[in-house]
Length: 328
Figure 1 (cartoon, one colour):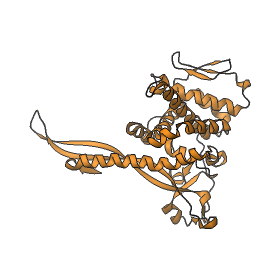
Figure 2 (cartoon, one colour):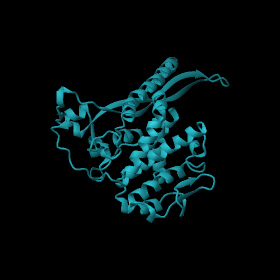
Figure 3 (cartoon, one colour):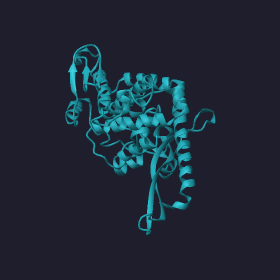
Figure 4 (tube, one colour):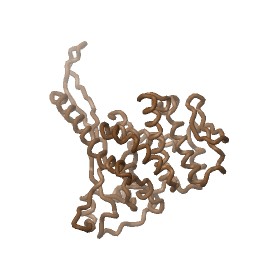
């Protein structure tokens, strides 16, 4: 879409206000769940049903939600991984389930970045020629979606091929293909990433209560590893971007989100990520209420880290995270 540059300043300001309002709209419901203590990573991504996704898009393109949209659907508390818009529900012949007391079903807001290009003819200061100038501005749109658990009248088909990376048995195979795989030092009683010496320290695998807990912890430290200056150059890994305490907490939040995304992809089911993420989110609740972009920025940074770990090349989907980090 192209707009004349004469109205760009006012239009651009409107888009920025619109973006801020959209961030607030989609964050409020999640922040409400944070404050209520009703967070649950696991119910929305039952490994038997694959990753959270739009049912129609999944059938056509085989894609699941990413970044912020993955986070809010994972935190939704629903068992099904299938989601549809109201129009999609109607087109598929569905209707809302009746709730006790005549209460209405409430939707879950998700977001999508769009680009709008503004065009204007300007005089070149050197040659005097009239040249066309273009500027592209990112802006947000949000959509309300509903979970299959809220709907009746649709026979949702069993998912096919949604688990991109298989089960827990395949984790080592996938991680061994990771570009620039970290050095791992085993031993001791702590798991951590050292940004100064650029290595991951892990307790011996046999000291964990379960294999799921081991891999969940490993994912967390691998996400930290991606933030090094030689990789994704995430300032919070080195204690930058906030005051020291907040920088550490925000980086931990990114690592928790990234570990949760990876757990979902591999079907790793553990309470550790759920409880830790809830604790981090609750400690940030007041800051997130004032600036909901922080929550979206953490989810986008986590998705970029996951893409790096899995060796994904940049594509149209990844640009959504790039746009979100730039705007946030």
